[in-house]
Image (tube, rainbow over all chains, first blue to last red; front, side, top):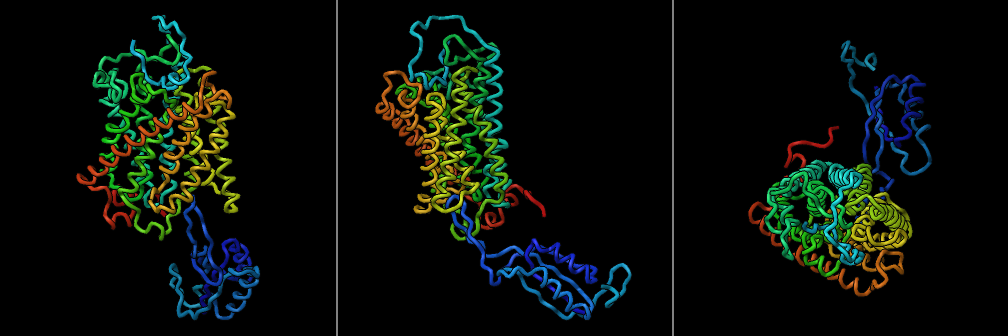
Length: 112
Length: 435
């Protein structure tokens, strides 16, 4: 099993969700995060007081999938999240040791 | 019957009929109805208007402390007002500096007591005049809290406000608005309280910001306003309430009140356009906070002028005040590095001074104002400058002494840990927002 973490532009969420459900992904976790990579922040000015906003808002999407689906998921996210501009985000793929469905006690890929 | 207050602007624009015989006193129900509404409008400026305007400008962790300070100060000053404040300001004493103690606890006032207006023989109930003036006394110390928001000790702001209205506000209100007052008698024009309310609050704010010192992390940490939305809601309520403030200061529902009303529209509009326009030119983007700041600076500037300038002159006055205030909050404050957190001095103090001086200019009939044919800009400006000078000196000395006193008795600031945690939790034990 693989655990995929993707940082994407906030407005891309619905497209990512649609693309992933289309290839059989049955669940994901989404959280609002701030961070920086190649994309720098911006400056805000309030009555002359300047503040550098160094962290850019992103959405973090976390998906646990069977090994066989992992490459398709990464491709699907990349395809819809890409705008060719700095700040499109990053995708990380991790090995996932175990999964367990709380209700039934199923483990492994059955729990996904 | 004793001549009451408010008549500040008559002294300058002398149009009082010669034969002031003891005519029959007439109370008009239309005047009474309007003044009751105007009084409530000024209350609405404090809560929620000013509270939200300020609240939106602080960080989330200090939102409630600002709402609380505005609410509590207003309530406390209302009590002080009926106990001795009204008497100190308008108690019927003929001193140049205060009205004496003849009306402590509103002694002798009944529903049949009447107060004079600007028209000979036309009166309004004294309770109404007391209530109207009460709202002015209540909002002025609440304006000051913006200067030391996010770090002041709650008990200190309450004690300071109680002392400050006693030592500064009531005497200055008497000096400016009572017929025996010092500033009234030099002929200064202050229709709705440019000196009494805005210069007073602005100067006290500057002294407070200097004596209390900057917030921890000022100039380094992110201190951006937490809700520009609520700031515009508050600013809009202030604008609406300001019609009670300015048009209400006419004390009658007549042509003079409508002049103050149209001026409160046009000066503010001119000021909003000026601030946003300056931002667009100087930094490429016009900001909403800029528009809201322009709105308040225009309202402040037209306050002393509303009853005596013309609506087109008001546009110019508002725009000038807006530009000067912009320069102060964006350039001067940064250069001198004091932390007047919500720009009370930069907007109320500076806008008030520009308005007071501008009143001496735009009241001229040559500029569309209501001054008589013999109106002289030069001599009126000198009088206005004197009124500003007396107010600034009185307020600066009084405020400095009181801040020092409160610092010795209670301490002005919360400790470092409480300031980092935020005043909502550390002073009041509650949070504005839960996520």
